[in-house]
Image 1 (cartoon, rainbow, N blue to C red):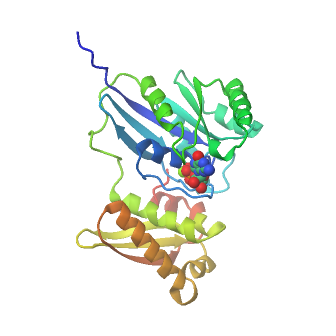
Image 2: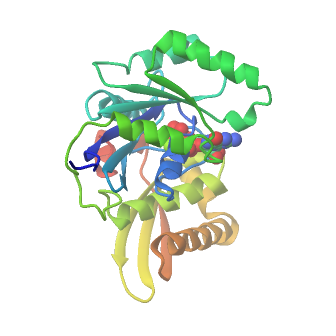
Image 3: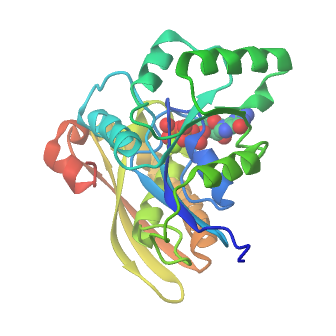
Length: 298
Ligand SMILES: Nc1nc2c(ncn2[C@@H]2O[C@H](COP(=O)(O)OP(=O)(O)OP(=O)(O)O)[C@@H](O)[C@H]2O)c(=O)[nH]1
Ligand SMILES: [Mg+2]
């Protein structure tokens, strides 16, 4: 009699409100920085596949944009669609990520709208490290449990990896028996170009404030490998004053951004990088269907 476990594989969508810590959780589950993170809501703009390969499983995680109540422009409409499609159509297990707080009505309604069909729903109440009173955590977990009836509630801190291994074990147990979907040495379905764009966007979130990072889209123009990699990228903004902010006095800000991005790209690629950044205005690109398509938004 064979004692080996059946091989399990499937797709797991990580969804929730903006800023709940979905991308931080993806990175913690993968033990690898794949998805960009910032303290500002609406950082993630694409569905990002992160593949975790184990001896008896392959978990295909989908990080998604934060679920907004309503869209102010075409970009936000695309973000909402991406999150909804991933959670409704593309997954075997749904992980709902919420902040550790008492659930609000709008939040519950938004999350309820994602729960469809017979697929298992796991609720991850994140940022538990920020809550001093453990009985609050218990009460909020019960409130979410009563309202959404997930299969399980996990209290976690993605940032500190508390509860993440237990959550992962539960996810794997709930995956269907299936052969692997991807090569077992594959980490994502995106190319280095995509991650390079994301890494530059993360540095923009780090360095600039308010509307500026939200008005930026990054596109790699050229990526030549070899000692060092030579990457040139364009940062698109919506208006002339934003271009001025990005560049800064005598180019000081764009030099700082280039340096910080080069460092982050070197760390990600594990190779030397020489980066050239240019800034261009694409008027109101977030409302322009052709521009949205050009930047890869669904
Ligand atoms: N204290 C604490 N902070 C956390 C935790 N998880 C995430 N954060 C922080 O919360 C902020 C948002 O994290 P993200 O992972 O970017 O959140 P997100 O849900 O992917 O956000 P969007 O992509 O904008 O929807 C960042 O500043 C994280 O460092 C946690 O467990 N504890
Ligand atoms: Mg995110």
